[in-house]
Every structure is written in C-alpha cells, then in structure tokens.
Length: 371
View 1 (tube, rainbow, N blue to C red):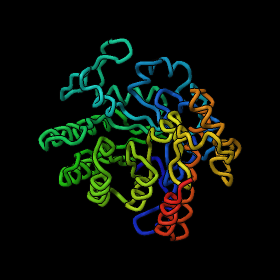
View 2 (view 1 turned 60 degrees about the vertical axis):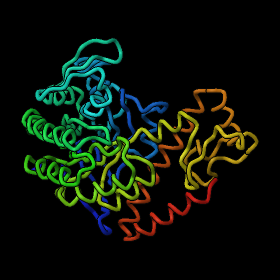
View 3 (view 1 turned 90 degrees about the horizontal axis):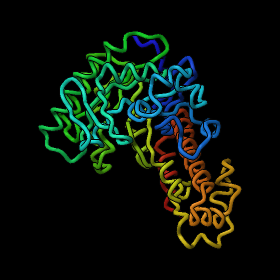
View 4 (view 1 turned 120 degrees about the vertical axis):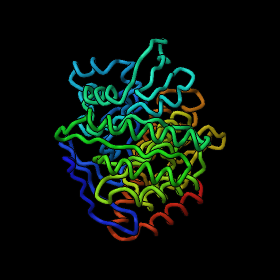
C-alpha cells in the first residue's frame, strides 16, 4: 500500500478530480506542475509561482547533480529550503536528458555514462544513483530512471528501451524502499507502439508504484498519436493511483488528456513561451513581438486576476519584448503560469459539476475568438 493517499473526489466520464496528499501539502488534480529544472522556475519568484495556484513544481536530477550537486543541496537543508519552496516537489530522474544527450552518452544495461554539457566532466547515472540523488534533494515524488526514445524510431529500438526501463524500474523500487511521506512513480514507455505501451504498463503495475507516469510522448509525435497511446495505456493503470503525462503540453493537449483520465502534467511550454514574447489567454495565443501590439493600450486580459495580464498595456509589453528587457520575460511568464493554473482550476470545478465536456468545448471555442 502507498503511504501517499490519493483521494478521488469526483469523476466525469474518464476525467477525474481529487488530491494527492503529502506531508508538505495537497496536490489538487488535475494538476499542472511548473518546471523548475535547476531549482528555479525561470523568471519567477517561488512566491509568485505559489500565488498562481501551483501546488507542486518539478526539479531535475540531471541538472541538479551537475550544479550545484545533490550532496551540496542536502548539506544546505534540501531542495525545498534551497529554492524557498516549502510545498511538494517532483523530481524528474534525468532519463529525458539522457536521451537528448545522445552524442555525450554511453548507455548499457546497468546505467548511463555521460559527459557534462557544462564542463565536459564524466558522470555515471544508474537507477540506484538516480534514486539516491532524489533522496538527497528531498523529493516528495521520485521518478524512476528510464530510457526515453525520440520518435519516430524503429520498433526494435523502442522495445529494447521499454524492456530496459522496466528492469530499471525494479531496481529503483528496491533502492527506494518504503519511506514515509514520499512517493515513487514508474514510467510507461513503448513509443508509438500500442502493444508495447500495454506491456510496459502491465510490467510496472506488477512491480507496484505509488503513481504511474506516461513518458516518451512529448518527443516529436503528433497529437493524435499521443492521444491514441494514452487510450491504450490508461486502462492498464490502477484507477486508484495518480497518472502523470510527462512533458505535455499545450492547453489543448491538457484538456484532451484530462478527458482521457490523466491527473498530472508538466511542461516548459508556458515558461519558455513567456521568455520569447508569447502568451496563452482565454482568447488564444498572442505573440507580443508582433507590430500590431505597438500602439495597443489594452491589457492582455482586463478581466484576469493576474496583475501581469490586467495592469500592463500590450504596447508596453511589446516594448519590453522588443528591447529584450528582463521585466518582459517575467511578466509574460507570470501571465502564462497563471493561465495554466486557471485552466486546471476550471477543469477541477467542471469535473465536480459533471460539465467537463462543456467546459472543454467552451474553452476551445474561446481560443478561436482571438485577442
């Protein structure tokens, strides 16, 4: 039995809302986790991230083991104290970064050896070491080390990585033990092969985890493939444990995935877009780089509760973006994270009311209006 309760309060079709309960606080689901790769959500204060409504943020093993180092973070009181975020933290095991560093890595059945993109130093990451790093960081949710394959890929390569990830999942489970108040999630792999996805999910369920992530679906495949793989995978996972779709995605991705039973998400999209002059709004996506905003006195959304969206003119934000001012990145990132949290808040309320399908349709129709 998991030591982390997951209370499902309501369902609407396959969509569900509830809470994952940690000693550091509840994570209300559906939940979007802002990405704080290197112990910071870029261009945001931790207190601002919390004020948007975020219950949990994501950190990353690969980046934190290189800088400043897991042992150093532990000596300084753990990641929560280090970054000023006393609420739950999920740490990604480094598997995705291992994939993206193909030219700098050597993979074998025991783990992966890679050269740091920072200084070229050599490091070794095994399932046991990944779990140890996450323990040193003080993660509330530990992710298993897996191998993620970029799509499209040959079936034989996808199956090899999937089988290896299951082996690593078993080793992570042993290394993790049974700590109170912390969770370990397994990661379903299998690329765009439905039977491999099902086999991966069943293998992980046999091992037994506190939650189950679906990985390898933000790596170049079209949305219809992602959704098809979710439809194959979700029925294989325990209804009473949380489901996390890794690295996804756009607001439309989130709504369609919630409708298929996903509970948790993370993605760099809202923060990265904000740093590059783009914002997500109830009217759709706006590019503040465009010259049409240069003389526009309107705010991004005068009805928004977010000060960044409500209190600054589009003309001013356009100016900040065009001149490369840091304040522009901060304000637009704030707009985006607030929008994503409002989207999740609306989804939770709609599921409780039994109106999620209508909520999703109304939200999508609003995007078509334009700003």
